[in-house]
Length: 332
Image (cartoon, rainbow, N blue to C red; front, side, top):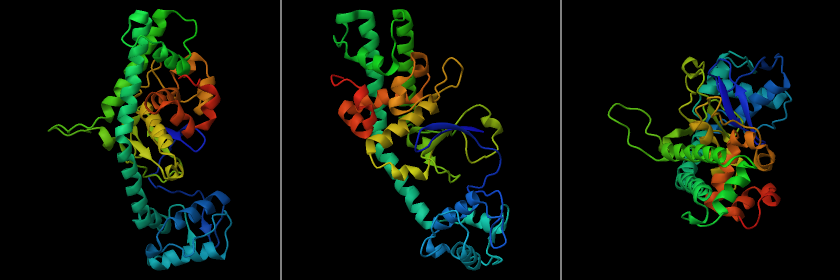
């Protein structure tokens, strides 16, 4: 199963292969275990995300990938708390890891609720980003077709579109065709972000219900599943009907950047994945403004940057992503 995942650095395409466990290890960890560093780190991280009232460690473990008496003691304490065999070892398919994955974690539940509340509070801006970007794309089309007779009578909408998509010296007819595609993409985002009442036959009402918490425990910020092969998915809980919010979003303190990331994922969400219309990831932030025209047309962050600029304006966009400052003219 292919997903588009936003990490702390950029977007990547990852493949999930089998298994529904949120946290997995390749080899045993603990007393008498193989204790691969990456597996030890996974168990240390997982234990630290378990509330003390559910058997988690106090004080929290140092997440250093090194097995020692404190990590083994924390494993044994967790096992004793849940009346498991207290052998101070976690096996890849054993009951201890299974219980760790199944356990309702109060602190995690509270964090997830806060994350979803943050997302819900962002919905008006996300919708406004789509609508503003749509209007500017429409004004850019009018400018090309009508010149000074257009409704705006200004070049700014076209200049803004050209900044993010670099139309260059191609024919006007080709640019118009591409601007209509850009506009249609923002229309699709706005449509699915707008809350609807589900029909009597059920189905996803869109709106805020598109977003949900990542059940896999991935250390990313957000991801969306590609539609290709969705009907054969190996992880039933994760499918192309949602954008999944991950725990690293907590590190995104700037609200405009948070909304930008959410909008970026919405571009993936509405992408129909056909070769001609596919919008994937070729560059992020300042790198998106250094791509060729063809790559920009198929790069999600160019659409998200355009929408962020359209709604928040240059000053707020640069404040949220300072590396863009030298690439966006002051008059835009």
